[in-house]
Structures are given as C-alpha cells and as structure tokens.
Length: 428
Image 1 (spheres, rainbow, N blue to C red):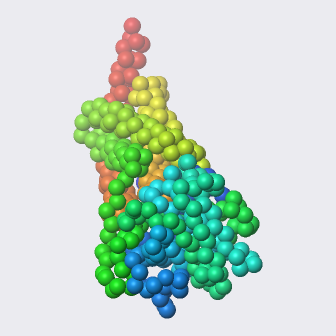
Image 2 (cartoon, rainbow, N blue to C red):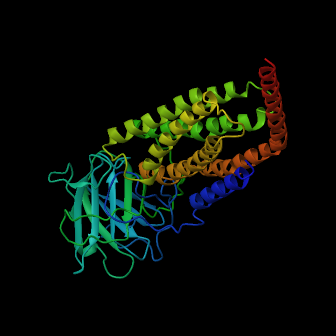
C-alpha cells in the first residue's frame, strides 16, 4: 500500500507529459488515408480573414474591384472573384513546402464537391475534381455538377509560394460554405486520379461573393457554424464518455480512499457509482462512437484514439470484475491479498489513460472531424483536471495511517476471537 502513492504519481505524470507532447515529438501526419482520425488543423476555427501576402493577391486576370471575397489562414488563401457567369478561384500557398491544395463546397468532407490541385515537375498544374462518400481519400468524379477549368497561364508554380487558378460556372449561391485542405507532399503523378498523401491541415470557412474585393471593408473573423447530425453524434460521444471516465469514475475511486475509515457503508456508494452510473454512461459513449463511425463509413480501429477507447472499455470491465471478486471472495488467511493492490493500480491506470484519451479526442479527432480546433476552454478544463485529480488522490493518502490503524485493530480482534474459540475447543 505504501508504494501506491509514488506509483500513482509516476503514472499520472507520465500520462500528462505524453498527452501534452513533452515526451513525444510530434510531426505532421503522413501516409495514405485511413479514416477521419489522422490529422489535425493548426489554424483558427474559421480560417480567419487576413491581409493578402506581401505584394497583394496574385494577378489572376480579373479586376481588382470585382465582386468576390478572400479568406486566408496560415496554410493557404482562397480568393474568389465573380466574372460574369463564372467565378475565378485562386488558391495561394502560405507555406514554403507545397504539395497540394484543395477547396470544396460544403461543410464536411463527405459529400462535398472538391477541386484538388498540385504542381508537377514540368511546371504544369493538375486539376482533379473529386468527392468523398466516407471519411477516406476522395475519388475522382467523372461527371461533376460543375466543371472546373484550369487557368494554367495564370497559375504560378515557381518559387516557394504557389498559386493555382481555375474558373467555375457561377450558381445562385452568393454565400458559399467552403472546406479546404493543405498538404506539403506532392502526389507522385500528374494523373487526376493520383494517390494523395493525407492533408496536414484542413478547415472550413465561408465566402461572401457580394463583397467588393479590395474595397477595404472590415470583416468579422467569427463565423457561426452548424454541426451536422453526424458531428452532433460524435459531440454526444465526447461529452458522455468524458463524464463517465473523467468525472464519475474518479469520484467512485475516491470514495473508498476518503470514506472507508469513517463508515462501513462506503462500498455501496462505490459500487453504485462505478458499476451503475459510470458503466451505463461508458457503454452509451462507446456505442455513440461506433454508430457515428459506421454512419460516416470510417474505420473503427485506424487511430490511437479509437483503439484506446476499446482498450479502456475492456480495462473497465476487468476492473469491475476484479472489484466484485475482492468483495465477495475473502481470503482465509489474514493480510491484504495481492488482488487488492492490482485493483488500486488498475484504477489509477484507467484514470491516467482516460486523461490521455480525452486529450487525443478533442485535440486530434475533433479538428479532423469538423475542420476546426476545439474551444480553448476545453483545453483549460483538461489541464485543470490533470492537476486536480492527483491532488485529490494524494490528499486522500493522508488517511492511510488511520486506515492501517483500524485494520490492525481488526486483525487483532479477529485473532483474539480465534484464540478464544481454540481454547474452548481444547477444554471440551
């Protein structure tokens, strides 16, 4: 029992360090597509309006006073200018390493018509119109609803900052919901159906084609975003699973630490909270994740967060089963059996893994799903909780001397009873 304090501190400290990136260096994700959990955006929630790059927007062959809009983030700018029955779009990189850039019309990756563009070794630009039916690499569309026309002569492929220009027939949408994506790795082929290395950044924004480009109008960076039904399913999963694993389970684990020296009824509270409340919510949270991934056509085990969720659920049921064995199967000899220590260590491990799991959920999975990072308040609450849980646990360790004293008296009383019973048997 005396080893549990240092062990708990080691586990929670290591988990916090790993989750915050102090032990593991992070690099932009690479490789092929494998579901929605592979990358995260490093930009603002909306993509933000910013001033054009030094020297202004590239010359895309339209008037500086045309109707249109421009939106920029730290990876790329999207410029749209209305030109009669067409709209000319220019994608301009804001990073030195350019692989491919893409924009699409919609709020989510699935179902949104996309234009993906990259420069080839000979200076030409490939324009590929694609669409995704699930959270995976989008496929080429042979007959897109609107055919994009590449403007090769207006595109810039030399230097570090590329600009790709294309025209698209205008429709009745003056306010356009836009998704965008950026990768620093160029496809190995100029073919329209070339395999894409997964984006290293992506997000959503809106374009207002009723504005005057270059008119000096101020624009609020904030944008109201409506979640899709699929995104709301994942949001419900995140809230319910976080409550189960980071609030209810830790509270249930602290009950024996604080109450066992004051009341013999502590186990009823412990059992009800851990098995009934936490168990029901944990199962609901996992089911919501499975349903959301299935509806999106994604893979269930293709990211650390998804695999971690299954591992946590298995560890939870193992912990509950072990607790039942400890309570109902008492050892014949005195002392604390090894399974009691295993139960305590496993409980600490589950809480530590839950902290890491929630961190990867809002820091990796959520930005990839919705195209924008989670609110900073979520990050603040997580950090506060990382501090409060160990403090609460180690505060309860102050009651250990009282617990050991009570256990010693209980063993002595049991020994005296056995001694009396043995004496009575000898006298018979």
